[in-house]
Length: 419
Image (cartoon, rainbow, N blue to C red; front, side, top):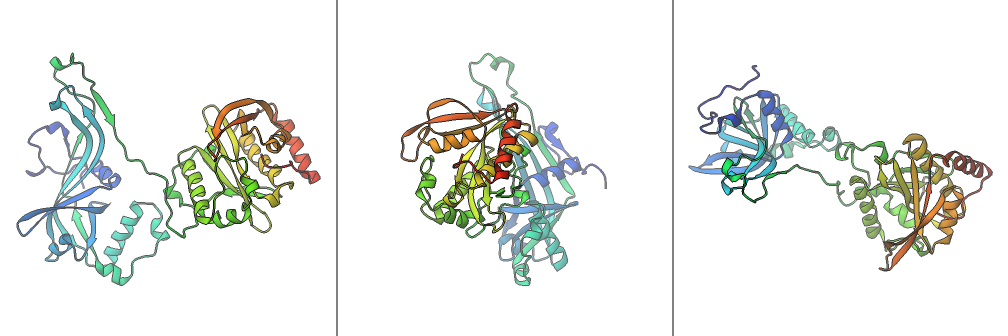
């Protein structure tokens, strides 16, 4: 197998030949990255172009469809001539003239006869490859097809023999006489960005690793374990436990969000926290009883700035039965140990409602310094604006604070309320 595809009359450019390429590795990379695939074929003398799913295995592209679909039906006689095209759009090019507007892109066109895959082993392997393309490891996280499902699925195999790559990269190519025109010109880059996974109804497990963005340690809710409390990554499975633990208006009294009215609203609250984690805005943990496993509450890092090596601890909602116990004190100790001893934070902050004197006392007992008041800092659930008291702790203050917190836990003491 050579490193290049051999050009044919159908894959040789008639214009802009500099954009045409035949490198096998380049074509494979585009096919592997792309999800958008269109396949053209002829039905009763008329052209058809259909979107479909594809996956490359070595030098063959497998196409997925239904046995009752036009493409599958057209291939039943031993194969169907097709033209397959995938495109990755990388940017829009704005020229000073309308004529020189263009796009940056990478595309593959493959021509040939797509044969129907009839053997069960090859069909199952192709379908597994399709599933693995959307998430490495997904095949083992989903039920394999039944014999009936396999019979209802059309899989076509297109050998990659007549292949070309067409691509454009770079900036504006304006006429020299147009450079003095007063119009903006340049490139608008485009890229595909996945949003946070949205679980189906009844799914309680966190998204698998292949659906989560690669996070730095600053944005990762690693398990933290103590004697009074365990902290673990917040997940939809915790909704019912949070509803039970936090069913008290006093728990939500000074928060900027209203108490969820039931499981659906709590699920929305949890989804919002997980979406904020995906966007890099928060790092949410759930608090559990280390003996019974019962959910006690939730807490988070927020305002994480890895460059400035700073973060805030807050959005803590702890069930009333855990007040005046070691749960809150140990939760904060675990979070501070991670912030200072593991992440190397230079500053950890807390914000609390100026009316919440109980929380202010709790934060002060952690060893944080009151730095001032931020006026009209956040909007409350009722629409009013709150002044927030700002506390902070630095690495210089951390050793003494850590010693006091550990001593208090050893005595069985605790901060008076949440912080």
